[in-house]
Amino acid sequence: MPLHYPHPSKRHVSYAKNGMVATSQPLAAQAGLTIMQQGGNAIDAAIATAATLTVVEPTSNGIGGDAFAIVWVKGELHGMNASGRSPAMLTRDALPTEGGTPYIPTYGWTPVTVPGAPAAWAALHGRFGKLPFAEVLAPAIQYAEEGYPLSPVLGYHWERAFHTYKQKLSEEAFQEWMAVFAPEGKAPAIGSLWRSPRHAETLREIAETKAESMYHGTLAEKIDAASKQAGGFIRKEDLAKMKVDWVDPVSIPYRDHDIWELPPNGQGITALMALQMVSEDSFHSWGSENEVHLQIEAMKLAFSDAQQYITDADHMTLSLERLLSSDYAQERRKLINHYAIEPTFGDPSSSGTVYLSTADGEGNMVSFIQSNYMGFGSGIVVPGTGISLQNRGHNFSTDPRHPNVVAPEKRTFHTIIPGFITKEATPYAAFGVMGGFMQPQGHMQAVMNLLDYQLNPQAALDAPRWQWTGGKKVLVEQSMPASLVHSLVQRGHEVQIAPTSYSFGRGQIITRNEETGVLSGGTEMRTDGQVAVF
Image 1 (cartoon, rainbow, N blue to C red):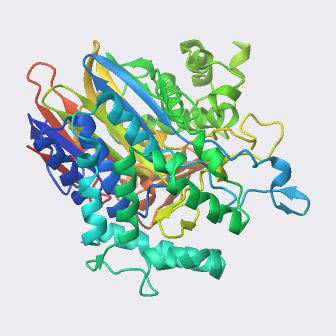
Image 2 (image 1 turned 135 degrees about the horizontal axis):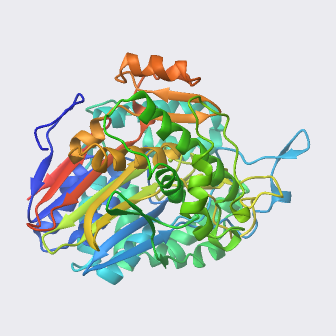
């Protein structure tokens, strides 16, 4: 329903036949579109967009982050896990302690894990790309070299990050971040120009070496040297072991469609578990107190299981089949009643980022996500490179009994997840909602808005969102109807109205009409996004 917008919206749904790129930054979307117009496919466009996002939205992702993708090419769905592992020297015993208890700092070198994003770009291009790799990365290099004006939401998050790092990091650790991202001693203002020649040089080296320099060459040496000097754990040997895994996406049937996510170490199966729980319920009226209540309760139960069991696939103690089984989902569904519950994890054995989607006229579709985790990440920038390193290791547990306990050369529980929908073995939608632990919650709400409430991609993203934050606590957007908020409170939910919408994720959706091949897309009103088409 292209003219049906039941919620406040900044834009209408976009349509195209030859190509479409949807992401959170207009410049990045245009970069991907340019590559398609030069003869590249959706995969080339995704790589170009992703690389450009490290420049035009460094507050959320960077060269030093991780990436995941779900790709539809020539009738097949492919999954890619390009999350890096922990350094070989990172053990529980090596962690700092507080009161005798080990902990993982949020910032600094300790939570830094091997960056996977450049490896992801190279792997995607090597398998599915059409244009030369250097040509695909050219727009990103140009923006880094020549500069660009900051957009509103980007500027907001940049300012917040500046004050965070200024308070949390030592003067020495903060120095390189300041030199790159606050060269005038303050965060660049909205509408002001920012450029990063070091970033451009690094991207050029990645382009020329097809990312080999990041893992086996000059860039690896620079990361190694900086880490050693600062007392960090990561070494060039860790970088040399980086390996992109091609994996089989996992799915559940839902409303005559199949919903696809990547298997762990990502949290995508959290969305699948929640959807599985409500798959036998009927949903007809957006904003119905009972329907929203069911969604919240299913999500909190799914999260409880995810946080208990999800980790590196090599360290999982339970099978995905059991976690995603219909029987187990309905067993969990029985716990949901009229009132909000305190969730606990079940026993199946007994029965946070930037997101982009692309599509081309050949039928290829890409759902791609990459992140530095918390804003700029660890706050560590490798001298002379412009590379801001992720703090993904902060997600490890320090409980020796937990499957996700910190250990050498291990992938941690990961928040970033791309999503995909098929119908009768044909591609229907590439979608994602970035934003830490909001992501599976955003996935669930986006899927239900599309399939249960029959909203177009833009309207599906416009809808007010809720976010479970623990126990009976639920955060809702200011645009959530007051009557619904009141009803949820009556059911025992501890509802808080958020002062801004920035914590509710930033999503994009591209759908494809099976009969005509026409693409329709929407992009998040909570960000500076754009759907670029031709």
